[in-house]
Image 1 (cartoon, helix red, strand yellow):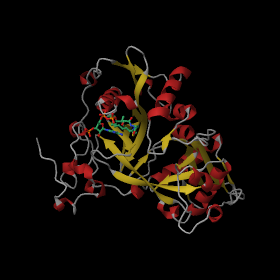
Image 2: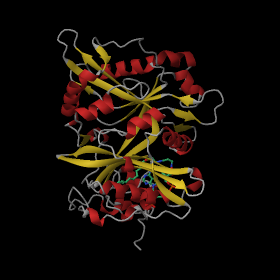
Image 3: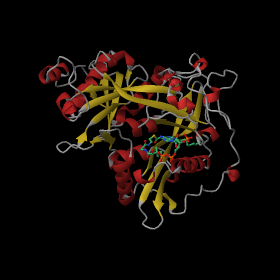
Image 4: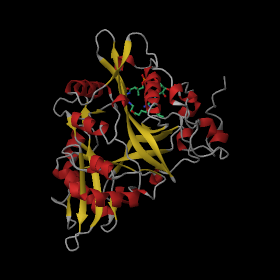
Length: 412
Ligand code: MYA
């Protein structure tokens, strides 16, 4: 067995990226070390080529389904069935991503949107049931996407909603689920994937940070999301975060169906500058960006004189359950999605996004430091959050760690 890298090995400090200086470098990753992903030992090795790590195999050689421990069985989740959607919703509501105070609480409408993009595969919506009770105990999904890495547009799966019931944790079910989704993705002749996680394993292509802009500071403080700043009173804090009642940019309006072609052009031009970004066509834009009440909101700026559409902004709505709070049960959060400013200053455009999010009674507006977001975060009174989000590629090596600002991809 290779020896784990010692934490004391300071020779590493100079060459390894930020995330590797954490404890995790010394941990063995018995599953991830077997997978075609960038390995920690290869970080900084510029002799390795950028691109696929393993070549496709004939579809006839894709293995049989991965064998689960005997009390469990695979199920394909028909997310169009109300009953199945309810079961998935409930599993995630009780067991998905959480910290000590909050747990993400994707709505059924959100899940349906997130899992049915153009060309989706039902077979990629995978559950595990207990054989006897038929209770759903684990879940993982893939959706198809075209993602560009530098000059290459690749067909990929975006993997999300990996969840194992709390009572079944640390029993190595997750690697089995990942193998099964990999198998089903490969059966569609797709050999790359992208995904994000709050934890580190081999090997992030970049690590991003969440920033938070209070919209309803009193509630955020009351529920423990934020704390009252030093030398601040509640009323000064409320005043600090106050926003105008309506957007300030002339011609700022909600995106409509007829805007899809021009929004697609704006986005295509804009996303071209990032090292990793989705390759959206009009069908994708219609699916991912046309507003859906309480799920995704998109606004654009149409010049009142020329009717030219010059700017675009969007956010999705994802509430969190407030754990162990009697009076308030949910925190309503907006997450910055894709934004393009060609005429209106990005700062002003995003301030208008904050204003409409506030009008919708959302409590907080979250944004990652991806794309050009750093240019407005501090000025618009976002504060740095505790959470990090690591981005990954499966079966595709990128030679150097990217900066968050080189990333043009937002996953849900
Ligand atoms: S990220 C959201 C993940 N979900 C949650 O955080 C919800 C709450 N947590 C849980 O439900 C469980 O803790 C999970 C792990 C299910 C996360 N991504 O079964 P185990 C590795 C990838 O004993 P459990 C999202 O949805 C871990 O390093 N791997 O552990 C994107 C260890 O491997 P190794 C992870 O805690 C998902 C092994 O699993 C993650 O019971 C992308 C331990 O397994 C994680 N988030 O279950 C999936 N967490 O020993 C990858 C732990 O090697 C997709 N692990 O360190 C890959 C591409 C597939 C398609 C390819 C197509 C070509």
